[in-house]
Amino acid sequence: MTERSSEEQLLEFLYACPVGLLECDAAGEIGMMNPHAMQHLLPLAGPRNAGNLFSALEQHAPELRSIIAAFGSATGRVCDGHRIFVELGAGRRTAAPKVIACTVVKLGPDRLMATLTDISQQVVQEQRLRQADTWFGSLLDGINDYAALTILPNGRIVAGDACFTRQTGYDVADVVGRDLSDVLKTDASGGDLRLDEQLFLAERDGWHLQEGWQQRADGERYWCQRLVVARSDCNESCPTGFSVVLRDVPRRAAAAEDLRRLLTRDHLTGAANRRHFSQVLEREQTQWRDLRHSLSLIVLDLDHFKVINDTHGHPVGDIVLRRVADVCAALLPPRGIFARLGGEEFGALLPRYDREQAIGLAEDLRTAVAAIKVETQGGILSLTASFGCATLDEAEGSIDVLIALADERLYAAKHAGRNQVFHSEAYAA
Image (cartoon, rainbow, N blue to C red):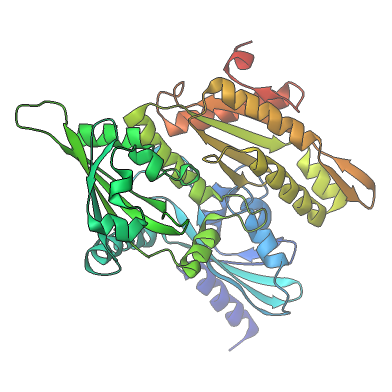
């Protein structure tokens, strides 16, 4: 076999390979890739440099650079099937969300090989299997007890069974006459609905089911499924009361929580990742449709971040991103979600925050970012960021419109001089 024929066979293999293959150096500069890799990278890169793996994926998988940088061995598998979730808004989806699996192998100190595979349909099937597993698992195993209560339309407890005492530690005689929301508080930070909202949905739909952390009388937390069912007499149009069933489902062990954090957090900053942000956004959109409570979005982008990376290097840039995520997340309300959406762009999702509250928080975030000081070899580095605010009300319930409005105002803030907050009135001016 001649050298020429070997090259031809290699090219034929690369072109025929059903997955994306590429080779790059430690800085991400691509030396070779096949057509399938181009098909994946070019749409993801957009205006960014498609000849650099990290730049091409910066908007959708900014954590990839830090994952590779943290790999200490001279050779070996850096990541296996790392999932890149492409779409953010639900309206961008047709049949299934676009998901790319990325596997990176380190072949030498300055040589990386990566594969890119479209696993969108596989992810859909996995979600269906998980839903089925959760449903049947809750029916067949892992349930310690059922607790039943009867409450009035105003939430006052009328009666309870012995299982309620065993499960929660509260004596039924001590809670009769009290408001259920005072006895069993919901976890606002986890996105649980208030009791009055649960009763509203149960009255409208006949029943309402939610899961979340519940606290026993001694302070111990446990994972609980709460079913609220409307009860009414035959001649009554409005419910005369509600039945509440609580099920202790010990399915959130420490290992599961660690896995949950791994799947929902950005590898570099610890903020929520795009996938988790998208899931919460869709959940809150559904609750907005049902209850019409306020929902606001803040997007922020660090000013001149490319200059920081070019001047001080990516390690300093990573420190900057972590500091920004820390100070911003600390200012969010309990139910707020702070996420890294890509590169130097972050988002804050604010359930139950109206326009004025969101603008006020955005100003606080802007001030906090401007107060960050990072020590570098060239001296103290200061930061600023530009902000855009929008509400789901003005987007008429559309996630895509909400994101587009916030992005539009973010870039208006950039064009107006940076380090400022733009919202509807400011944009109109």
